[in-house]
Length: 231
Image (cartoon, rainbow, N blue to C red; front, side, top):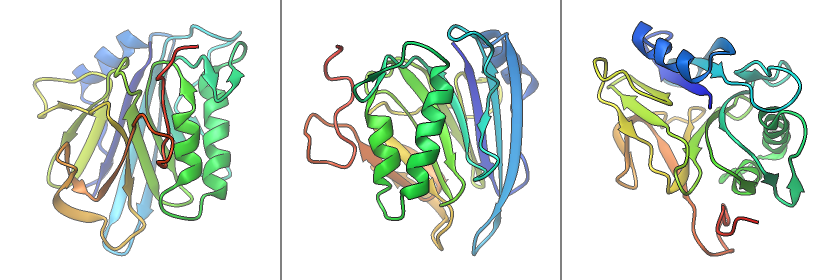
């Protein structure tokens, strides 16, 4: 089990509180990593920060998180276990590293909305997970959980920021659970970045414009089927 914290703010970098970071370290005692970056859109400067704590269970080494790509600036915080990506079993190596490479590649060829490449990769995962993924090239911030909600992810929104974490600090913020019904995406490279009180289909209230891509049992949507059958 690993710990995730990520935030987007217009007021400067927002890091986990001391108590929250302590809880995250207990989830991932083998490594703690941080990164931060700034993004500018047409309306405001946005400050993005990421913290990951790692419990190493797979592979021959501790894979530091957050995963970062120097070429694109993309970032992944991952808490999960991948049995397969599509038809390919993940039986060796670090599953987070494998997923990050697949997401970075998918994002590099995504040029339209919806971001079909990234969504296709995420929908093909067999296994429990929660994540946040920044596609820095297109200014897209993805987050979500598998359709059964087997890994935790919560959010805390204020008028100028939103943060995500694997667990919450009940003394600091009004934390709510991210629904396990969809993959969510915040796009900050548009003129509609700041939309006070925006709601994604009634589930996620955030100061940022949020798109929702639901899981379903059909095969004709942009996300596809996730974990309907455990093979």
